Image (cartoon, rainbow, N blue to C red; front, side, top):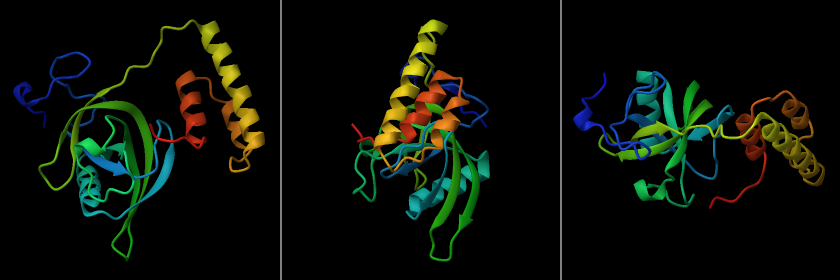
Amino acid sequence: MAKPDKERPESIATGKPVLEQKGSMQPTPVLSLRDVVVYPHMVIPLFVGRDRSILALDQSMNIDKRIVLVTQRSAEIDDPSESDLFAVGTLATVLQLLKLPDGTTKVLVEGGERVRINKFIDENGYFEAWWDLLPVDDTHTQQELDVGMRSLVSLFEQYVKLNRKVPPEILTSLAGIDQPGRLADTVAAHKALQRA
């Protein structure tokens, strides 16, 4: 059930109270990730062992199977605080959850939309977040987008030839992507990048 506006934090982007978005309840449970960034449209298995992360997953499964995935600034921190988490993450859907005998949980998630966290809440033994969807930059002409996409694919082809860790089959899947943002996210997911 939606909370009254007086309890909703203000959006960083608009200064107005955060609204329910895309059918997801807010605040939404948060899963903090170590050494991995989950991009929109990415499907990835995650192994979860921290109690607060398992609680967040359980809550997500009880509500709408949506969870905000946020990368930690440092993987060495076992119990991250709000300041240890980045303010941008991915609103994801839990596709499958399996509790393992050793107490950990294997979860398959699919990245949805990119979100900016307005406020973290840490009241129930796990993080929850109020968030806004990050808008897609649509200020470029179709010609600029086409040129940029071709250049990105060409440069990534060179990267794949030089880097044996990236399977060449990924280039075939890139050919079928016609959305600039999705292409950029797919390329970024296959590059070895350092967190800023």
